[in-house]
Structure formats: C-alpha cells, structure tokens
Image 1: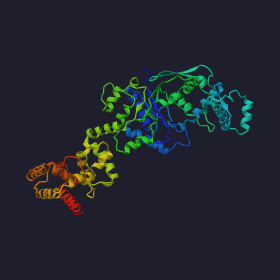
Image 2: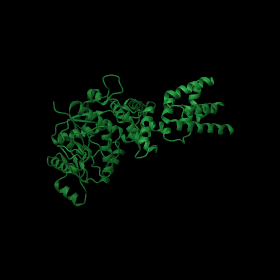
Image 3: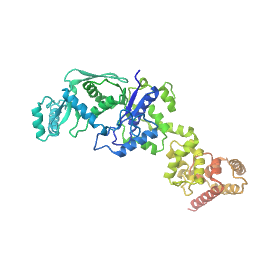
Image 4: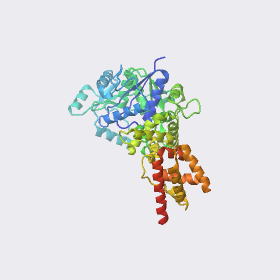
Length: 491
C-alpha cells in the first residue's frame, strides 16, 4: 500500500478557525494512525488579503494544538517550497503546457463584459456561466486584443457534455454534469493562480495520496478532477468531512462565541480539551467514551468512522471536557497554564517571586476542581492575592443579615487569634467546638466566614482555604467583615 501523504493548506487571511483546526486534525490523525506524512502548505496567492501576521498566527495555533508537521514551513522537505507564492513558476509552466496541448486558452474578456453577460443570464433565467467567447480565438485575434491593452486570463477548456464523477471516501459517488461547469479561470490577469488550479498542481507535485477537507469544498472538486485529467495526473483519494454548524444549524459565526483557536486559548481552554472536542466533531470512536486522550484517538481514527452529517458546535460540551482535564491533568501542568491568567489579572507580577509562585501553586491546586476554564480558575483564586474584594450581594443578604452574624464572627476571630497552631485540623476543631457552644449548626458559622474571607459563597473547603490564607489575613478579613456588618446595621 502506498504510504499516506496528506496536507493542511490554509490561506493566511485570518486566524485559524475552529473548522480549519478540525480539518488539520483529521489530516494529522490519518497520517499518524497510518505512519504517513503530514504536510503543511501555506496558500498565500491572495496577495490583497494574505498577511505575515496570519501566517504566524496559524503556525502558532497549530503548534499550540500539538499538530506537528513533517514537511512545511520552518522544516522544509523534498517537495518544497511550501508557500504557494514561491511556486509561481510551476503554475506558469503547467498553464503553458495546457495551452500548448489545446486544453486551455487565453481569454481577453474584460470584467465589465463578463458582468454584462452575467446580468443578461440572470435576466433571462439562465445560469451565469462563461459563454466560451474566447475559446476559439486565432493567434491574430489574440494579438489584436493584447495590442488594445487587454489583460488576459487563462481558462481551462471544460467538456460541454458528459459528467465528472467524484468518488468520495465519506460521501460515496457524487456526479456533476459538465454542462453546469463553465470554462473556469486557472491563471488570473495578475499572473496569480486560482485556488482550484494551484492546489491541484501542488497536491500532485507534493505526492499527496488523500485530500481531506471540509464539505464546502466538494463543489470545487469536479473542476479539480478535470484539471487532474487535463494535466495527466493520477487522482488522489478525496474525503470531504462534514460542516460544523451552530446549535441552531446555521453557519457558524462570531455571534455564536469564539470561533478561532487563538480565542479559545485566550479564554482558558486547554490544548487537550480542544483536540478531544474537535475529534468528536464528525468522527465517532468505537466506544461511547467522550474523554479520549490523543494517543487513543490516534489508535482508533479512520475515515470510515467519519460521518456524512453536519457536526453541531456545542461550547457547553467543550467546556465540560475542559473542566475534566483541569481536574485530571498533573497539578504542576495546570499551575503553569494558569500563571499567564493570573498575570493578566494583575494578581502576580510578570516575574513572580517565590512567595507569589507558592501561593499560586497552592491556591490553584486547592480550587481547580470547581473551575471549567483557566480564565475561570484564575478568577476563582483571586481573593487569595488581594484583600479589597466586594462581597457577593446575595451572600450578604443571606449570611450577613442575621443579627447574630457579627457577634459570631467576633467570637470566631478571637478563637483563631488564640490558636497555638493555625492548621487545617486545628481550625476545623475550633470552629466545630464554637458552633456547639453557640448551639448552632456549623454551617451557620462556616458560610458567613467564607463570605468574609473570600467575598464568595462557594469555593474550596473553608478550613483548607483558611490554612492557606494564613492567620494574619484571616483575622484582618474577619475584622473587615465585622465592620461591614456593623455599618449596614447602623444604616
């Protein structure tokens, strides 16, 4: 069996969209599951929209996802260069070859003339396809039109009858009537190749065996098949993966939330969670597990288990998966991932000292079980680092409105101040003994204390929280809460 060679070929006109990341992942998975080769190619022939910033963002996002490539930018390879803008001579040579064989031709129709023909077609209810006006121009006619200053494009001669068949590994046999395909452009008037043409030339030159891409490219495939045939190339195997739709089954857009890998990363989603989630968008594993380490996905992955049906984008599921990884990844890894978010909130310095790092470490490990994202986790530990927080309004109504709240906190403060050892065990013992002496449930002491120390009504175990905060901060914050309750009483 021929060794699998696949590619991801993004256009650097924006950030790496979640759909593009899923396409890259499926290509990468097929390569890794078969011992094949994963190629990264940058399709940057759209000179007006392509930017180096987008190239950098795409490469950064792929690296963050862990989708390493075997050939491509920064690595090189036998079939480079891997930027289409550096391969223009190849497209020119092949286009001239098609002209010489009578399979392509120069077209001198102006944009205005083409628009007038499209408008006429629309007015009469016909498909707005090119009418082949320049298909049989003589050399003399071409020379005359060029002398007028007209810029030529190069069009492929498409058979006017018959059909073009795409045998898709996911969708099966798809038939397109040639009568609906016009003589499409392969080289634009500025000398740049069109998408359909350049990717065919490159996919063949790079010896690719499988073309795995999104379903929306299926309509391009018959044109590409015609190009393969005109150029005398062997066809690769095509596989068009299902679209990713919003929950309302509309096209995914910014209004549905984050749509780029970079946005998800900045919101505190982990690489493992993104990969796990993307793998399940259109592909079904053998079992029912939804949490799958990457090595298990690689072992199970096959195109046969990719669905024809659209995948539904569900950030709730992604967030649930992310929460799982936050709870179960090695603690040191979670701490390191959280540090940038703590810096962003100004909770630690850009070059944190030992005390800051120790508090970050301990507070993150104490709190991570309740967070779903790194952003949420950083916020959840913020009170460990700053004193001037607000109290939760509902918590104030529930726990600080009791007439006995201030007195209970005063007694708790006194007990804590007198403790010989300020440890988790001694704090819990003292609190439960005080509650018993006051004739109240422990919760009636625990909840107002939590609100006083953190400003929140939920969080990690109170006694672990208090031990980590330390005696000085606990006493100071209890005093602050007592004053706050007293002011409310006076008002």
